[in-house]
Image (cartoon, rainbow, N blue to C red; front, side, top):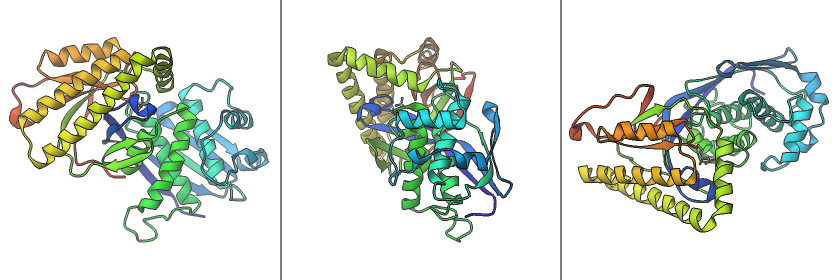
Amino acid sequence: MLSEALTVSAPGKVILHGEHAVVHGKVALAVALNLRTFLRLQPHSNGKVCLNLPNIGVKQTWDVARLEQLDTSFLEQGDITAPTLEQLEKLKEATGLPKDCAVTGHLAVLAFFYLYLSICRKQRPLPSLDIVVWSELPTGAGLGSSAAYSVCLAAALLTLCEEIPNPLKEGHGVRWTKEDLELINKWAFQGERVIHGNPSGVDNAVSTWGGALRYQQGNITVLKRPPALRILLTNTKVPRSTKALVTSVRNRLIKFPEIVAPLLTSIDAISLECERVLQEMAAAPTPEQYLVLEELFDMNQHHLNALGVGHASLDRLCQVTTAHGLHSKLTGAGGGGCGITLLKPVAFLGQYVFISDARAIITFPPVVP
Ligand code: MEV
C-alpha cells in the first residue's frame, strides 16, 4: 500500500449538446473545463479516516476499528456493478447517515464510503488516511462537480491500494494508461450513481478522459482536433437537483411518449450535426459554420424547455445574449445552473457582450487529467 501523500485532480465539464437525451441512450457531446477539483490523500497509521470537504462544510473523522466491524459483505462483489438501493440503505445505516440522504454533504460522504469500502475491501487493516477535496467548480451548477469528486476519489483510492500505479513514483511520466483510466472511470461511475441515482456516465467520462468527447451508452469517442470555440459560461446561481430533473424528464417521457421520444431523437440529431460541423471546422473554418452552431444551440434550448428543464433565469440569459446577436442554451441538467453562450471567433466579432457572473471561458484544446 502507498505510504506517501498523493494529490490528484480532475476537470469539470460542459455539455454542448445531448443532456438528458444521453440518459435515454442518445448521443452527447461534452468537453472538459479548465476548472478543476483537487484531492490530497495522506496515508497514516493513526487508526482514523478523516474526510475534509471545505467547499461544502464537511469535516468528519471515523475510527478504522469501528469501520472494520461493519458488515460490509454486501459490497464485496467481484466485479464492479451498480450500487443497489438496498446496498445504499445498508451503507447509510452502517455509517450513521440519515435515511433521506439528499443533502449534498451526506451524499458526498455516502459516495466516499461506497468507494473506500469497495476499493479497499481487500486491505486489512483498512487504510488510515486523511483526505481533503477542494474545488474550483460550483456545486449543483451543471459543471460536473460531483463527477470530478468521484473521479478524484476513485483515482486516489485505486492508487493507494496499488490497483493502478502511482505514475509519479513509477516514472511513467504523469499519465495513467488507457486501462488505468478505464478502471478509474468505472469506479467513478459508481460514485456518481450513489450521488445521482441513474446518471448516464457522460460526466465522469469527460472528467476522467478530459478533452472533447462523444458519449453514448458508455461508448466514448475522443473528438480529434476540435476547433477552438469561444464559449461564455454564465452561472445563474439558481440551485437545482440533477437527480430530480432527470426523474422529471423520465416521468414526462412515460406520460407523453409520443411527444417526448421525438424530442430526444431530435436532440440526438442535433448532437450528430454539431459533431459533423465541428469536424468540418477543424479542416476549414468558415463563418457559415458558426451560423449552423448557433441554430443548433437555439433548437436544442427550445427542446430542453419542452422537456421541462428550463428556468426563467436561463430564459433571461437567452434574451440578453440574443439582444447582442449571440446564442445560448442551458448546459447540464438545467432548471437553473449554468448556461453557455457561443461567442463569435475574434475575426467575426461585431460587438462585445458582458454578462455578470460569467465564471470562465472554455477553450479547446482541453485540459487532460
Ligand atoms: C448532467 O450533467 C447531464 C444529464 O444528462 C444527466 C446525465 O447524463 O447523467 C442531465
